[in-house]
Length: 590
Image (cartoon, rainbow, N blue to C red):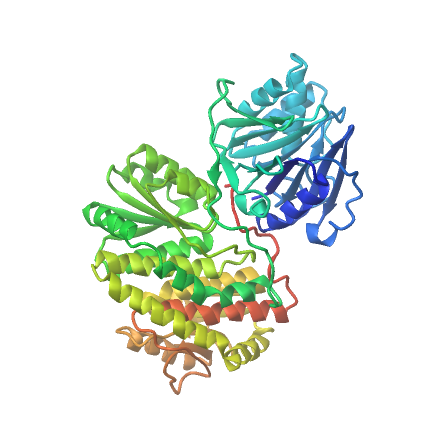
């Protein structure tokens, strides 16, 4: 979840690292820290987002630096717990992305040896463990390797040493190296987005590898054997993009507004890979989709499209809670994983097992060089551009539109699917361009400010859509929201429906409309305030949000008002729209 960034070059290292960390803040913004080498290692650390402080780093102009932006796992959000952490003699400083699952045992053993701990973090255990290894040898690289091999869990570390070297090691959490061959500058980071403006080539460090950069020479070795391994530079795969709100008040609003363009980009992709995957889907005995959080809901919608349109027996799995499926996975089965970052830890662990068992893996990611992409037999890129807001919007829209198109390819109606998505993107753009639509959502948000509970109803193509609406309201507005299939209403939740309770319902002109209206009648009879996202009004709707009927992919249109509602409700409540509390965009720990 945390972000790490290192730099060796000719520029002002602290400022360059600060810039990289700002581009990594979606991974965590509880605290940050930067260490630079100028004869000695100097450090600045603060609690809070780096954007608030980075103009006043109070660090010397040096050419070597590492930095870290934190999502807290072990230890509260304080300046002391912020990374990097010094060694006792300040000969090196270290930052970590991950969780040391056996840190309690390690800390206990080190404490008995007399080591002192100043923080609450598991990261400091790594520092002290390296110091302990140095007691028996003077080679820092070997000490780091030996200490790292003692750790359990998914971890990546980066270390700056007083002798001028940067050392990094990877097990699970991502690590990439960028290089600008014109300036001979080297970057080490958690993702390519952070150094995309500065470098066009990258090395993806594999699991179980260690990196050593000294005198601008890069060496990569196998952690287990210590032997050097060959590596090659690859193109980053996308043009450096300026991270800018482009006149919008927040990244979230900008990214919602980009959804029509993202869908049009999807249609422009070569259909050959879709067709090859479709053949494997038809041959497979079992097809699974998998994801976590918003990507998990996208995975469920993809499975819905494969079942309802492609007539494929597809089951959706939750990344963190599907280990019972492991014995059921068989060679030739297909598993589809949508992910913005391509680094979601609980999904990656399942995919790694799938790879061993001979499953066919297809991924849809937005980050070049991601772990999921490299594991996949079929690697699709969203081409959605950077999504900076921690609440995913355009990436989700892209994922479910991709799933719709794939199902149409399975149905052997690609042209029809592409035509429908093209129409969807046009209608969505028109709707988003209409100021009246935004004003009606703003008014609705104001009316919901003091509501404690919000219920959402959907069915068939709209069930996962209202689930995503629930997620957005929870993430951004910190409201209790509850989404459920409309048919389940009468079985339990109806006990909570009383006068004035808001109930949001997504209704399309499809075969289950009558069922949805029956649920509307039931909540209306008990005094609920019914908020309908639909193309046709009805007397039982208290608030009507009119959306265009886009035919088969209409559900994709219906998520847009829900995203905007979460945005405006968050804004009215005074919440940090782009950086909601306690969550991060890329979840690289379990």
